[in-house]
Image (cartoon, rainbow, N blue to C red):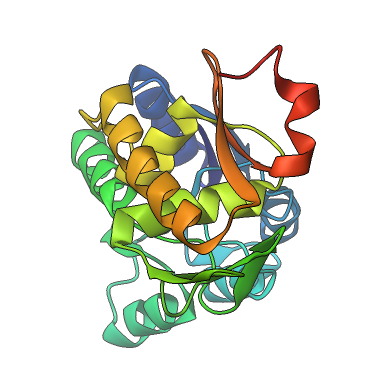
Length: 235
């Protein structure tokens, strides 16, 4: 897991980096709006922590730009500004949490863990497609050549991860992180249960699209006519 810390206060950034490292999380830092936005838009971070007051811009604008780019990573605001207007503006812009400075690092880490535990999907609206199947993000439906199937929340999370990945592999560790969140007790057996249910629902709507297990790594979506080249690496 990789975090992005955007804050002009070097002391706070250093404390954050140290606390995150202690919790097994790597992090990068940016001291101003422009460098923070550039790093955030690289889409390599699992979550971001930002202040509202930044050189060359504001935290609210930063959040709006990140959300406008379609990035759904959690954004946690840590600021000394306790005015209701500022808090409302940041949350309405797309922040997932607003924390007041000063905050003990232990409390900050606990709140970060709480945010990362929240189930979430990664597109607000729209349709993702693979082979002859569409995944309706808004209605939690699989729509294929054979019919439709409604998904539960976690089934939807797994489905969206796989559809967004295309033919790329989604690792089991990434599934645990994205579906259950940081510091979760979920294990690989939990993944297998949901993948089993998702496979049945996918089979009910399509004979072409399958979820293949990549032994020791994770899962990927494969159209039936693409499976022959994968037999040496997949179960």
